[in-house]
Length: 180
Image (cartoon, rainbow, N blue to C red; front, side, top):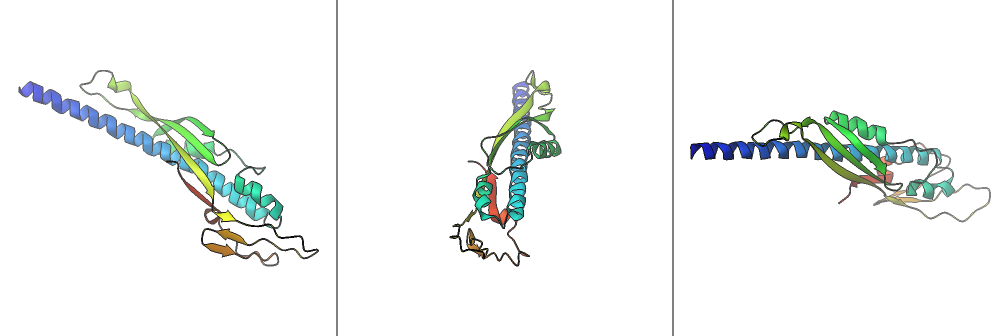
């Protein structure tokens, strides 16, 4: 009976080790997907700021299809490594969505369950970038440059082409979160 109880205790320990390793993999996947999406968000915010005087380009930026974006998966690899995992795949699933799959560097470990000593956990996560802003292009009013009013969530940005000292930050323009 004592042997049976010890076996059960070791089996529960093995399950706990596997769960902890799996949680570590999920944490790494979440962080990596968010990092890739945030990197793209920051690039889009920078593109918007550089093109603030050309409102005709804004919609492409908010749709994530603007030219000049650098790959964001290296940022995902960096965050996965910080969480002791390797990126197995990183892909943009459309312009505003990243899916990352990772594998932990550590195995589940030795336990009473045979074969766990070399098992490493895998997990995947998807992060989404959502534009927070809306605008209407103004009618062409001749030589005077009029910028659209930018409404981001509950804040209105009245942009003056003569005074662009204060512009929205990338996190004012875009929300980044894990997909459900």
